[in-house]
Length: 101
Image (tube, rainbow, N blue to C red):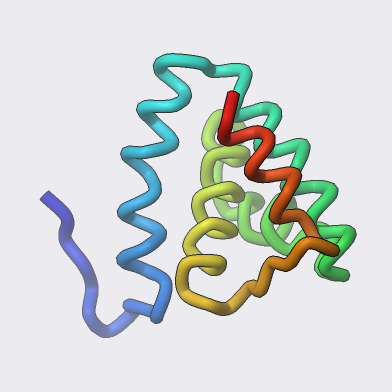
C-alpha cells in the first residue's frame, strides 16, 4: 500500500515510490549491483554537470544505510519524469551495460 500526501506530492513521486521495490528486489538478488549503479550515478552526475545533486544533496536527507538506494531511486524517478535527459554522450550506454548484468 502506498500513501501519498497530496499537499507534498511532486511530479516524480509516483515514479520514485515505484522504483523502490525494483531496487529492493535487485539488492536482494545481487547487492553488488546497487554499488555499481551508484558508482555509475556519480559519473553521470559529473557528465550532466550536477555533481552531488542525487548522491549527496538528496541522499543526505537519509540515514547512511539507505543513501545509495535513495539517490538511485530519485535519479531514476527524475529520468522517468523527464527532468533528466539522457543521451549517448551522458550515460545511456553505461546504464544499459550495468542493467544487462
